[in-house]
View 1 (cartoon, rainbow, N blue to C red):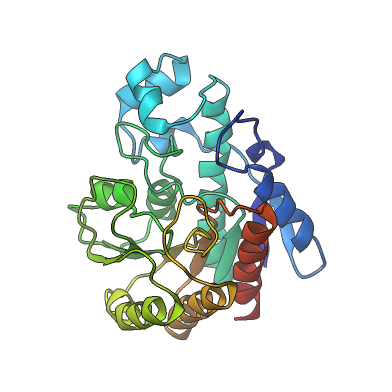
View 2: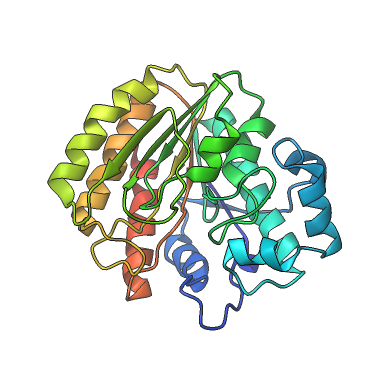
Length: 287
């Protein structure tokens, strides 16, 4: 199974909650003969323009983001990050194309679902999920977003596109405040554990697959975990493993190509986030 990754994902973010070391640590755990590692490369500006506005991309390209632009991204922004996130978008695009050929592929990065067409938000300068769907050129696609935070940017980008079914299962009273409607939203109350979460997910997946997608992007955030610093749900590692199994089984039983992105994960101990991400990848490998 192809696994797309770049060491450029590990960047220095002084005092920030995002442990970018997790990408390297996950890759180190997975480097064996079962996986074909492929170096991710930058998405072209033309590919990014399939989703993002020319004005916004020009700001990224020229290093002229305003203070307000940077504030919404909540990152200690440096101009070189534009190319770093172009690589992350490129990784998801390449994984989507590989999944179309082989049935499944993994990107050890991505899931930047808070980016809108004309601005970034919440650690997400570019929406790799949306760009990858456009680059894949499919008539119908679906997004299964299980990050603890609502996929607001993805929902807004595809709001008027009947060919893309967006599904987000998330903690309702958490970031972002503005939650544009997905095709299917499940906003869970604070403190939900494995049983309630998995029951809701089981009920939703048939509706997602009934949209007849030709490609599914799985945004598999590790942040519903009970010890995540930015999440208020209470899923165990076993519960998250069952989440992954349910998603992968639903997609694979329908014979639809699946591309996996890691999305968020901010556990108190980064090793817990790494464990969760590794288990997600291994679930897809076993399918």
